[in-house]
Length: 72
Image 1 (cartoon, rainbow, N blue to C red):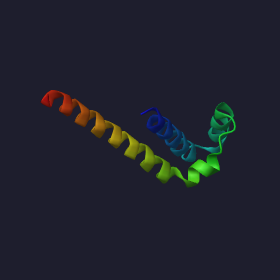
Image 2: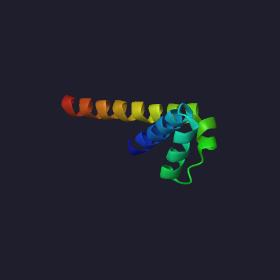
Image 3: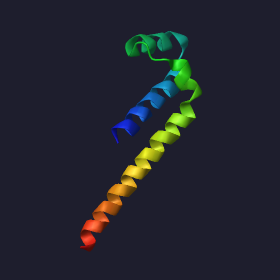
Image 4: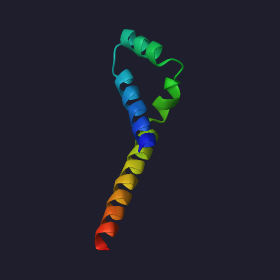
């Protein structure tokens, strides 16, 4: 769950940064430090899909585990 949320946060920051004026992009770059935005920008969709997949798996496994406990 933490991995998925972390990946979601990074993808959200990348998306916000792409749509901001240049002067605000520099501020975000200074706050986040040595984050390689070009790498994440290229892999934005993949990162989002991975985080969504992990979240779906976590929710499904949690639901199945709870259902298994109710059956006994």
